[in-house]
Image (cartoon, rainbow, N blue to C red; front, top):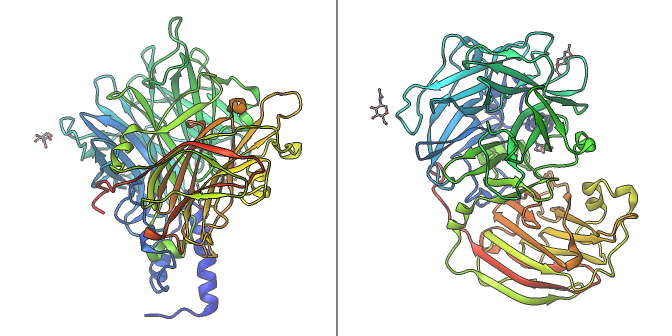
Length: 586
Ligand SMILES: *[C@@H]1O[C@H](CO)[C@@H](O)[C@H](O)[C@H]1NC(C)=O
Ligand SMILES: *[C@@H]1O[C@H](CO)[C@@H](O)[C@H](O)[C@H]1NC(C)=O
Ligand SMILES: *[C@H]1O[C@@H](CO)[C@H](O)[C@@H](O)[C@@H]1NC(C)=O
């Protein structure tokens, strides 16, 4: 075993930190780097921090969820996977199947480099149910190593009768879409699910305008899923840099929660809106707008003209490269998203794995029409233990914290309803920060005393509270010209661990809810190194990765805290231990 000198060690850490931030850059000698890292001392991240019920393969690196679908009684999830190590590289499409989106069985990779047009990588893509019910997968292939040249390929099941869709065929006419007409071939990827109307399929490919910084979603049309031509004008664009992993789908605007198949269009009888989501390569977050799809013009127009400045996010934490699909079995639209690690790449290599998928979320349009609402799929409740613990009508005074005892909380589901008796003491909102939730939370974290709030949960807390991750709300007085108090939701992990080498910014979003009746709810799915939280019934969501050094396993505690000047009341809190499902053989 080779012992690394101090300088080599520091250099390696830097190199790996760089690798960890990148998910779409080809590194020629990644295997060599990964091999070198095997000589590094064991991880300081405890092995008990591996997640229990979030989607993960047995080992190695994962990123984007790909082509989620429901077929003949089975849910399929494909995902970007490095079969050779816990850093990005050698990307193939790993494949798992499930009956319930909770218990997963891993199959062999479905799509691996095997043809000229995907020889250097099989990157992200989507599934479409074609008219005869056969699924088609469109994905990005890298066909030249030197410049990372990207084309789009199609694949079909070898055996349509196999509900597990184990084998996939790549027809000889691949690639089916190439970057012609001035498109930057190194920035051209992640085809969407196609939708069908007037005898044509359409899909989007994400890109950035050549020589500029406008993110763009190009539309391609086809009659037969084989010959594709680009529509001259893109569906939409905005000055945000490269758009990765676009997603485009209809949502019902009748106030109900059922999902719609991707080909459903608005008509006189059916109020339908469309959602366009892009993963911004520069910011590394998923942003969306709600608007109208004009099929004749092949254009999307956001309802909110300011929407393109990208205020709305699926999740204000660690959540990227997401993708939805329509589940015909339960008539709902389900969102998958990737959450990367917040430890170092050296740790990832030492622990042998990196990356998880967030709990699948049902998504629908809020009755206001202004934003989406997300909620963990109901199946996750099947993991709840039989004996939940609850608190009822418990007042929490300023500066007080109340422990929730009687259950293990390292792997738990917690639902709380809060009531704020009075909003009178709410702080004024600094106008300079009124549009920047994340900054607001970073200067007014969980320990900065407020008026109404901060109040919420301390999760994955150590017995003496040296370690704790705060998930909380803070209420501000209505801004000038409005009578609606402003509600901020935050996750503050700055005290979550004694490990100094973690990426731990506070994450925050505003909650568009009317708190004048004093009521607000919070749900947190806690899973060892994940805290996935849903504010106000899923109006604002924050996923955070944390790696406690003390609050591990049985030593993880749960509290309700109040650092405001006003009393708050927990009208109801229920906490369940969560069981471990079948998870790809782990
Ligand atoms: C196709 O799949 C079905 C169902 O799993 C199976 O019975 C059949 O043998 C398969 N056909 C081939 C050619 O593999
Ligand atoms: C194409 O994209 C790459 C990567 O962002 C960039 O370096 C290059 O300048 C782009 N080419 C053009 C012509 O815009
Ligand atoms: C996740 O990891 C952190 C820390 O390395 C990076 O700062 C993020 O950019 C990264 N997120 C994504 C989506 O790659």
